[in-house]
Length: 457
Image 1 (cartoon, rainbow, N blue to C red):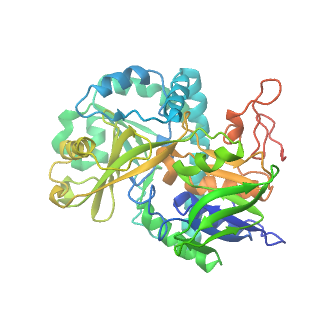
Image 2: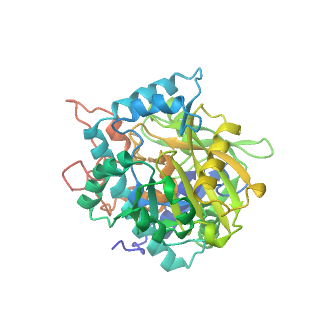
Image 3: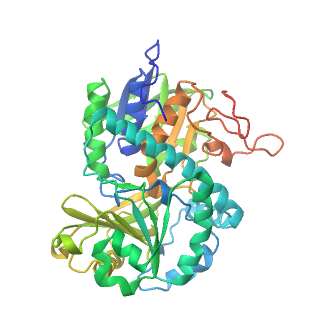
């Protein structure tokens, strides 16, 4: 079990964290717990105001899987022609969009899927334990429920295809239950009136739910108690470098005044906006914004409402239960940084929740939202060191930022402090995208791939 109380540094290194979402705030927590002086910078007026604000609420280590999978290219073509398509591609003038799509397609093989899923689940399972430890230590409350996730299959073909995911779950020792129709209804009684719509499901009993924005806000308050400083309303314009390390970060404050802030270490946790700050430094980070939508409705009938999270495999829509609310999240839209709400994906969210849980929530009081998921082509986030000695990355978590936040942040704190990492870091850092001499890819997060020994620059 991960030790939630690491040895504190004998020196008070100052770490600046760029980003005030769930990834940035958890990074602040673990670095502050390790003895760092920490400053968080964000352009918004408070924590978790962008991607972390109204996500699906799933904490699903067992559901951690890359979008790049065998058969996805053919499915994508069919989806584009579907009325309730889980995917929409809106061409832009940004060449990075097409490059990222090509990189993703290259990962749609059985071999790459297995490697990528193992990496994601390794980090996600570590994060699950870190969240448990954090919750025990702090007593934090965020409308959490520990009642599992049910992946719902509408067709026998989907149920049969789950065998590949089950093989990885077995390999990693992750508990699961393969359920028939009756088993799904026992797990989620609200599905009783719609059981003709599905054939079975895969239940992951260790998965959880919770309000990510509430969690982040509560953890921010605990960070303040540890002395973490927050600079909200600051636009971040550049990371300054001498070619060896970062010398400062240029920001513009609310009053229009510009200044340069300096520290010993810098952590980039800006999600979809991370690549633009790295590009001038010569660091190519293949993270692209994938827009997702959500709707939040009040529970209107307890018996017809979900008790935890259901993932509709056909429409890639998650339905999550909070205390007195239902959060419905899904769709993937490739359209750059466009955050406009579109009616078609919102109609899909309404259709799915009404189809599976008719009468469970009050659609007349729905609140809609869209956010940008920072996706890598292979699905695995980028956590670790860079070629610049004091610049670290914690970004690219896609749909799993909430799921992987605590584990990624704890691992990052290990790496910054050059402690032996709590888990194997193979394939988790930017090194997997950068070829070394001889054609090899090398991890810089602290453990060389396959060696299991510290390897710091």
